[in-house]
Image 1 (cartoon, rainbow, N blue to C red):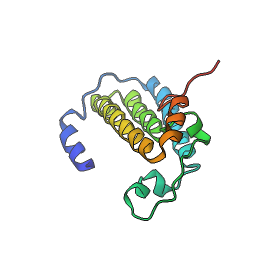
Image 2: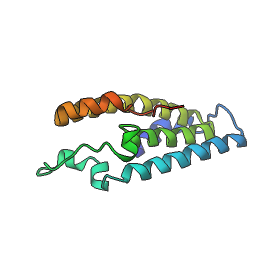
Image 3: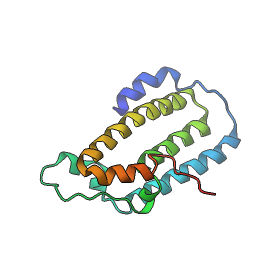
Length: 144
């Protein structure tokens, strides 16, 4: 997949919307936020769970809905972490290819989140619907 993306995007690798060293500041902040989100996402999940292996391996019936920690604020913190990382590269470099890949990631991420929500609703039924109604998918609610 990486080789395919590198090949397809090669002609645009040097096309830049802007060049400004000051953009490295917000990019660095976004990058760090993404790393923190990844760490918090791992808090109550194993690497096997984060990789989605229990969903495809047999004999993994002992699953529970995790609604604590970072998942008490957002249902899909890994996707939020990915978004922060992609935005960090886009904002920091100004490269058109980074912005295009970020847009593609947002579109595919939205589809994947919807698919995951459906799968989790099928697996956990009413418990997940209650959780879904009170916790946003990706962007946490700001309480003042």
